[in-house]
Image (cartoon, rainbow, N blue to C red; front, top):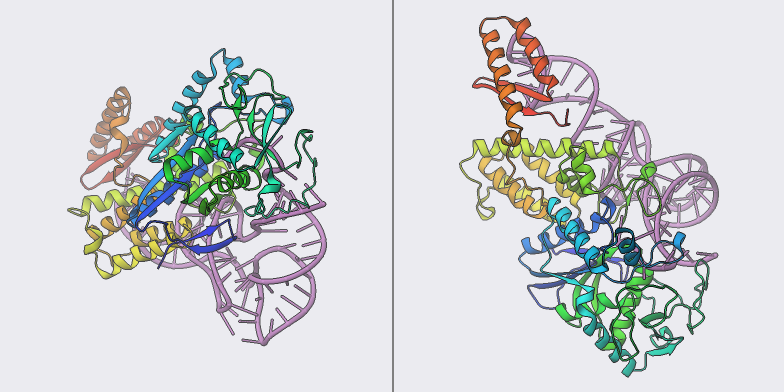
Length: 477
RNA sequence: GGCGCCGUACCCAAGUGGUAAGGGGGAGGUCUGCAAAACCUUCAUGCAUCGGUUCAAUUCCGAUCGGCGCCUCCA
């Protein structure tokens, strides 16, 4: 079965065919680095990671490019458009690039904790200003631009296919419905390619250009950098669904106007994480980050499992209860895989699996080929692990094969007794020994009292024929 | 005003024109000194509501109610 992806361009499931056989160029919208990324921000990176992992498991050589937006951001509407980088810098009394470096580092720390592989190329916008200027020069040479009020604009009327991705009809667009109109624009959908004048004061970073000292328009970086690293046409562009009407629409216009070629073949857009009453978005309330989860005693991979439990094109409803469910499920997967590792000498390689295991692995792949249906893929993983007809070595081999795509780190998981505070460990070990004595003496009342005492330390006991083992309970005491 | 999404059991969540995956959780059981773990059984004649199309709809169409997103550089 071929891989099918839902292409926003066309709004249908399409068979994936790369431009160059065996190779895939993928551009994923990266972070804006003026604050910590919250859990909602992290969803697309997990989605992109799963896509990349799956493509690689199918044998493709994937070049994954991700931008880091470290220039030019408005703050939200409450501030009437103060530059976000500038605002953060002022708040923290630091330079803009210093802020960007700080949050970039924080971002990659978080993605790493979510087991998101680092993209092949990570490109900061500020390091690619010459490429952006060059792109604007090409647009200017072809007559797609005009200048007004000190800024250079893209003229959407010159690009007939404008809005194809978002299915926007320029004549129907209601001008100024929510935003104050820029009087310099000929059409309100026109957008700035290069600023020398802005209603936003205090732009910290400016560059010389043929149009004067200033800074690039906000859509330029993705066009310029993707083409630099992936060529003027490439396979997949992925990002959040909110980018369809403006950001990606404008990227397409300026890219294809410049090159005269089709820019991107497949557009993949993920839906948002919704929070119900928790509200963590821009304006108010608590911002939930990966660090928040760690502080509350969760493994970041619990969140990854939670995300995989819903399809990337569906809104995912985050609740603590749902996250607890994901944590319990992931713990169950780990237990089963650990048990298999105890039973099996070694994982059987994918090409040596018996019929039952192979059928499970095939079903897993079929689910993933159907527009990356991770919920069904997870169900197939569970089916495999519960299938008594599959020998342990084969179950382990197939499970690890699946996890290479899911990225739940099942292969490397170890029981975390070693990570326990040594003082606590010594105390628990002593209590366990005392309880063993009591049990030996058939003093079950004392044994149960000791069990209760141990439980009070946040530790769970497990008796087995070969002795008693213990682990920390799920939640921190 | 425009564009778009969703409403499936206690929770999260797949899915299909032919009779509801998976996980969490609950209940019962086996096992266990007691637990835990594991294993077994079980928990929606039902998929927001009302109409329509159809031999057949949760799945298609329409309306209604409810929730959400984007239209500003939020992922």
